[in-house]
Length: 442
Ligand SMILES: Cc1cc2nc3c(=O)[nH]c(=O)nc-3n(C[C@H](O)[C@H](O)[C@H](O)COP(=O)(O)O)c2cc1C
Image (cartoon, rainbow, N blue to C red; front, top):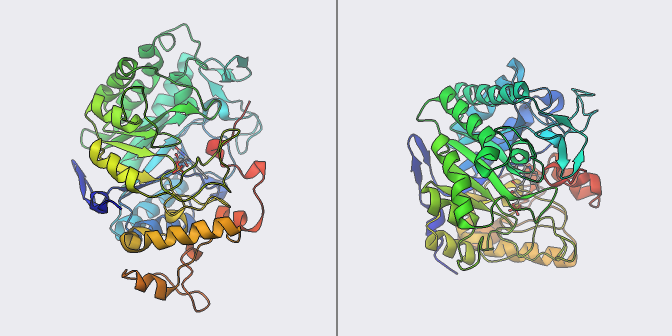
């Protein structure tokens, strides 16, 4: 195994100082009734910070626009009570020595009319399409565009006021911002459609407005992806030259960090080079990047037809990741950390199931990986993985005081088994349990 010390180097960007290179992925949880981040949400993020996560991205949280939301019980990022909740989240994370950024979100055409609490409001999309060729959403006017730009800027302003350390703008996975990027859903004939430059204009305006709202020294992260929920094979750019054309205006508009979402981090982006999306993005922009996608697993989290399924996914070593981190000079790696039945991996579900993972990972992740793989093979484990205190100690790791013993043994997963995980553990995967960020809607 490679020397993993690269993962634990501190990182500094202006005033943002991170203890290590572990970044927690934004993961929608649908656990905010009334769209308010209640105490359970505060505790959830506090635990991840207590575990030593370098930087936490919150689940997608909706900006203040009538059509920003498309799912039940996701938190909003506006309104007194909601912002008070978010302030508590930021305070709790800081009290544990962590850093946190909200992921500001507009689902665009992914919204279906009827979604509460806004009810009959239709999805908003650049050309009224959620999937290419099917016009059944509201076609955004210039006024709508201006309203959404303003909503993101207000979100950025409020994030800073709440004490967050940065913001992440969700420009990936086929949601509104990505629908502007993507030719398949952007057929506009005005200044927001056509060329790559034009398709990037809306997001550049959002970034500029956010920058104006937060000032020069507040980090702005942009998450982007080639793939879309609507089409895993979609690509915004085909060549490094196009990538440069796409990225540079965004970089110049004020993006500080690019969060490059891939489904499999080990896949090279273009022929003739081993660089992945984050590697290319860093090479072109010179900005820090975050890589993601099946870290710690050998298969995808939502497999394409014919690919390995959750059940078949095996745990994988971190060596490839560490090698890339060093070779590509990637600034961060990150584990998209979540747990779904039968897709247990040492990294993937580590931060969801084990908020303290970062602390004892160095010593016992291999044992954890073996345990999870065994459980997967036997199909005995559905979202739970346990190491006993003696096993943890045998690995030479220090057990954090804050992990309580459950029924005489060390059930490391217990504290995060709320909500999705608990439900998932109790019943088989069904289509409606597919995570919102990965649900195809046509
Ligand atoms: C349950 C779940 C919820 C997610 N929610 C979000 C989200 O709110 N915002 C986002 O950008 N990505 C979201 N994602 C995508 C993850 O951040 C990540 O990119 C994806 O899981 C791939 O990484 P992995 O293979 O390491 O899990 C979600 C994924 C899952 C499984």
